[in-house]
Length: 283
Image (cartoon, rainbow, N blue to C red; front, side, top):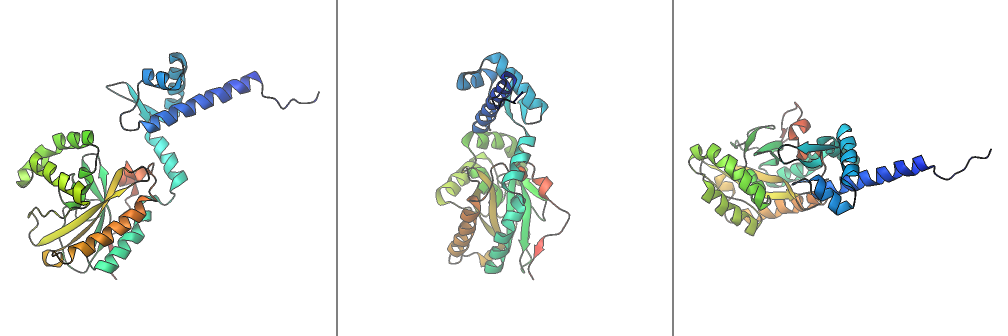
């Protein structure tokens, strides 16, 4: 008997289930921060509650979706982001940004840092060490500092959505208050200044003789994911030189933002991108 190319009812059912599962993934991706309840998914996608529950459980079993507790909201799991990262950016964020750090270091002759968010902190994902001996809040690659402390961490905090800023401040203000120079009024005031001018060059005075500047780096969806910052001696970042430094930083940040995959796993688990090699140094 000649085979029939038409799909069998079982095939049609499998294709329909796959289509609905993909619809769920798309909906969760569009609400990645807050997640979604079953009722919200059903209303948006026109699926029954039983079907939605069944597909969600299958996606959870495959590691692509997780359920946040409390709240019972569903969201994309880290395995989904890892798959998307491998598809869209095999080199990862650190490899993508390395040429920018090298160009900035060669042009400026100062130490350059790539900072990314990790929970309530900013982590130094990479650095180019200039010829001038400096101190920084994050120190070497892998070092971390609370969001809001230092130009790079303040820049990331300033560009987070308001609800996330509030959450970070509730957690971080008690952590950083013993440092003396920081409180919620300071963070909110400086954050508004950073958003208005597009960069941070706030000097807290905690690192005597040190100065710095930072600009935000966004992903292709327009969400802040990192900061490019320069650390140098105070006399090397005067009013005359600052605009040149900011222009170079912003040029590199703009070019990077057009390339950064929003699903890069390094944006959620930056420590996974850190290797045991030392910082990039000036030749």
